[in-house]
Image (cartoon, rainbow, N blue to C red):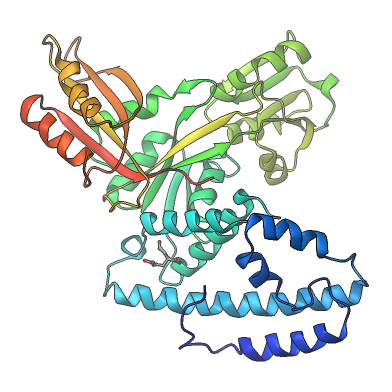
Length: 414
Ligand SMILES: O=C(O)C(=O)C[C@]1(C(=O)O)C=C[C@@H](O)C=C1
């Protein structure tokens, strides 16, 4: 579905026409010359049928001519989209900064539609990545967003930043998760991306604890498949006498390390990228980090992926200073302070359960305010501005008290 082409400057029609003319001459894989439109319109069964009717590539030059034509069309459409995105920006009025133009709920809706429309051959993940980059570039026309993360460059946190905000955002590598919170709170960063949970290792308590004293809101979540690689200067496993990595990464590879590097010294450091920087100093050291870190720091991959669980995934939270409207498929994180009274937690959970609100997570942490008091972090389905969660929160507020909405945000897209 393309928007009305009022502001077309790029001559889509001309390119498409000349391509179609040459396609008519060449024995092309797709006779109408419009692979993009055919794929978009096709239902899964139709797509399969279409794939079967595609004849083997006739000759390299003819197929490349097809690709050139499609590229011209894609490029023209991207330019056209960027102009419309710019218009949307203007429609929002004169806003102070890039952060005010960002709409995570709208981006989530756009990406969900991309997934719904996808009939292959590219995976949902690949298409989401491409569209995320397009939106990232469209938004950066005003001014790129500044995103704080646990640096240095090459960490999984940086990958999570790219996954959520695309490469047109400006990443700010920081020294600790605390610093990410501070830079967002001060306005030096527009948003921050912080790790909160790993599929194998559970919650990262130190991140949760920062919410106890921070006024920041949760505006999004990112799920990242984490693949760990062992890397060193020489690339030879027999040279390794020490392995550096973040404590969580060492834990994710515990079995592999026990089996393949028994007796080797394992040292936990502040981040995986820091581990690579240390390992780069000597031939007998190695680091565990993402494969990208090997390219960034010029190291040789010794082995990988080496994580014990093949579905190893880390969940990151996007933190910011504002809340956003519902996207249609949201999660809400709550922080609840429980007074030492019988049934206090029940009084909070019961209004949620009665309305059929799903609860994905409940985690208790010592409340720093008072001895033996606990704060509960609870994730529930829905948005705090929409029923039934809106009504449940109003009831809890009246009868049980001490509930803070940390944020309502779109569920992670693949
Ligand atoms: O729809 C908007 O509000 C836009 O600004 C456009 C757009 C996009 O490119 O689709 C760009 C940035 C926003 O974060 C969301 C969407």
